[in-house]
Image 1 (cartoon, rainbow, N blue to C red):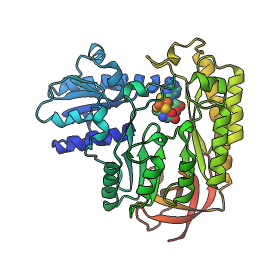
Image 2 (cartoon, rainbow, N blue to C red):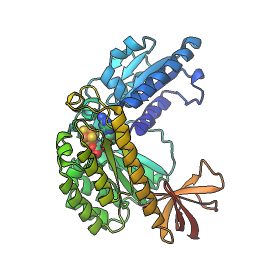
Image 3 (cartoon, helix red, strand yellow):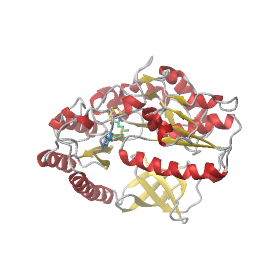
Image 4 (cartoon, protein in one colour):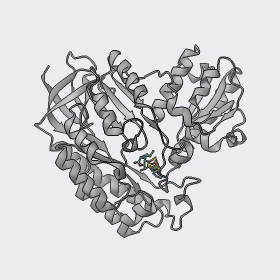
Length: 418
Ligand code: SAM
Ligand code: SF4
């Protein structure tokens, strides 16, 4: 989501006559688009900011702006830590960049902007085949560990006509795959609901694949599962964050489902959408997590066999309820549990990838591999990365490949059909 916000900032700035530079020392404007979801991201930002200070000393006309969730949460406080910063704006106020050329006077813009869902900002996209499209902003869920409702504000759905217009333009521009973005896409609601939106997008010619993130397990409806089963353009992959295999912790996290509810949704998904890939997020070491709770998570990973997960050590985020809960765990225990989770999941992912050896998969070609110029990379509908020896096909082509090797983080294939 932050990467796409950066694309919007670039789009707005380009209209003002700005161009990107690879060399930050030559920039007239440096924007840090920050993330505050975990402490690690925040620490990294402050060390990068120190580097920008040195650049600015040598180039007096340089301006430094802080955007994103740290900007939203820290506001004026950033000037105390870094008085050389020129302005600060939150994720709901990207449009203020439109006033840069005429001189942006406000130094801190962090107010709640409920109209953001109705503001169509220009976007400078980094890819020519795959595109992100925001369908909703903010979140109402207030999971006890999460800063998003405080930094991105309340949930607002973008009107469906505006989404469709953007995607039609993308299709005309040659884009083949779109990923719909929102913190909880399943609760999208304007004149139509999320399954209705998928049905409308599916009718747009030229778009071959439709993906979406993130789905909240509580709001995953029968109707959405039906749409995933019926519409060939909707990719057979869902990212469905579980967070913990312990129902006691899920309650403390305010997730709104039990482990059994989650399992029920997984089995319906697998019954109704054969071959679906399911990925998830897991938090290790939530406050008061016992060995038994952790064991429930380990068992959940073994029972469900996700295709992949993102797992994180619990991070105390200022202003969230979980940050104040009793039973905060030492970093050592959190790390130990995280390592166990990741090790187990790596084994499961590798096993599942190996099971695909010999199968035929359709992949969308993304280009030459960054690590091996002799290979092309592509992705299956189930979101698995496949590399194949370079052949004469264009980016954006959909081709069939045979999987010849399943690895931990990717698959190797060979072209079988053009
Ligand atoms: N909206 C999505 C959902 O609820 O499923 C998740 C969005 S959040 C930006 C991405 C992931 O970051 C979460 O699923 C969670 O696993 C992780 N996360 C959020 N806050 C965290 C925290 N305080 N400590 C560790 N991980 C956290
Ligand atoms: Fe954060 Fe996702 Fe929960 Fe919203 S649903 S509060 S974004 S974890």
